[in-house]
Image 1: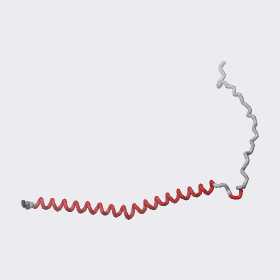
Image 2 (image 1 turned 90 degrees about the vertical axis):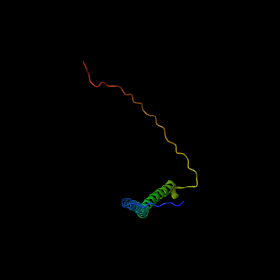
Image 3 (image 1 turned 30 degrees about the vertical axis):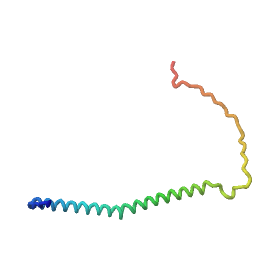
Length: 103
């Protein structure tokens, strides 16, 4: 079966062209947004993430460096616990005092 093609009126033709042009413009806008995201926003995001990762890496390395004992104070003998002298604590008794004196 052959399809019969209908002739469009002038208004239908204008409407069809207008819709086609709108689709082209929408596609161009999408491509432009995508191109801008890939060329501007993505590299900035990558730089920010790499800077943050480098800061974290440096912070971890500095912590590891300062967590180790100093080389000149390390000796071959195991350390002994140091005794702490015990002193009794004086107890203090508090007596409540009235705020105002009434007669």
